[in-house]
Length: 401
Image 1 (cartoon, helix red, strand yellow):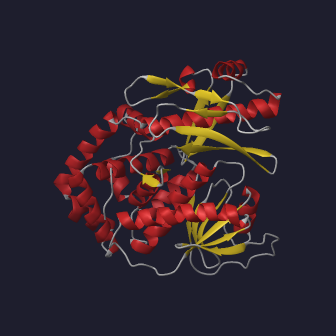
Image 2 (cartoon, helix red, strand yellow):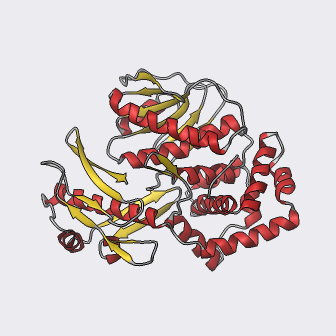
Image 3 (tube, helix red, strand yellow):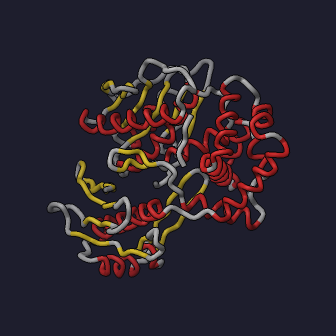
């Protein structure tokens, strides 16, 4: 295994056994497509379905590359369900005994349905990619590491892959999510962080109970798990111990035994202290921060067009209009919400690695009826927010160059 150093959506893992009720009749007709790694069941046009299939084939290669010789090659494509709308996704899952309400996507393993599932309409391609990358790792982990993998490692790694971006046909990992950093740092500084050993020793059942309870602790479960995994991957010696830990779990060791053998009692105390220092000092990735702000600006552009029939021609005009109406958005993830406001002037700038802020640039629409493009010139990679119209609905996406 070799591990190198986006808008989060609520996702879920559903694993069940035993009898399940038969599905009711449904009007959702799915066509079947084959890719290298997946069998796709979808009501999307084949051209759209292939975009996601090709992306996930590439992501599957990344999973395999970073977990080389970690598990058997399954030899057959894995199921991937892609629906056009959220309602179709919820309805299809409900008819197969799965509650998909309030989820952005899921990995399901029940007697009636197995595979990844999500929808595409009403959100950017990048958002859908992030969901599939997260849930795709859960699917991969089950087949290559097994059901014995601990919750913190499973979810931490899934978020690590969720944040990955494809830049110039290369998968870029190791991006640093500002929301997660801020949450973990604040918890460590105010004493509300979960005890290190409590997190690492938590059973999958206890994890599930906390997440489904609506407790604020759910946020810390995910964020601290990501933070610990990121720390381990970023340090060669720690990464080697992490690999050993995962191999022990794969071979059937209990979580407690695997932790003891891979990290040891005394070493785990040093591990905990080193992680805390790392988490407090960690800084967000400039690319991720830029993408969050581009997403905010895109939502603002669309709101002005749809609510007021207004299309700003400059960034100054966009900022003025959004501040006049006190425009805000809420970005949600696993147990957390982040409020972004037009009254925060930083939303209209982006951070550079040099530390000097950059100014977003607004360009005229690509064609009549679409909204202006917005780019972050000088950022590397340079993102540009673009628009398309699907069934009369304006959809934004981000291209990285």
